[in-house]
Image (cartoon, rainbow, N blue to C red; front, top):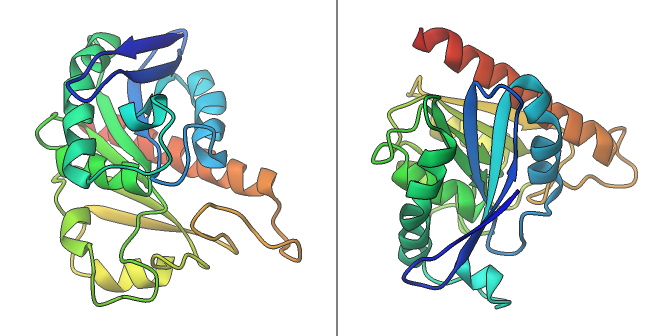
Length: 219
């Protein structure tokens, strides 16, 4: 199901993969360098509905308009917030989980508490710009007061899983799951023992376990 959602920045778009009997709605945004066809986003949309989770992948207005460069973070937050009403309708009666990959993960972290999300899922959280670890976005990652899952490659130039674990060692709300051999796009080298299908399976299994845990602890 595709839902076009008007915003003050132009129309955005929700691509919804529905669960037959949804236990939660998972709302995911894309990164600044790609769309909702990213490997991890597609894997979650294909697999989570069978586990009882409706997945809504959101295309920001700039992407729908065919532009190549993402706007400033504040603009991403505006469109996301203005789309929340349509997502709340999807989540009627069940918890809402927000998340996304890279820039989309940042948006989710910045807005999770205001949207009363039950949890946050970050795929390849951009801890810092490549080569500039001093410009950390640690505080942004720690904004949500709800459980947060981060799936991070160990070749990610925006911050590896080890970098993230070091940065958030003093918090209990964030769980980091390494993705062996993966870069920022969750891609692995040809020489890696893991293939793209293995990465997709790891991502979906980790997210499913996390969501099941979140729902159990909410009861």
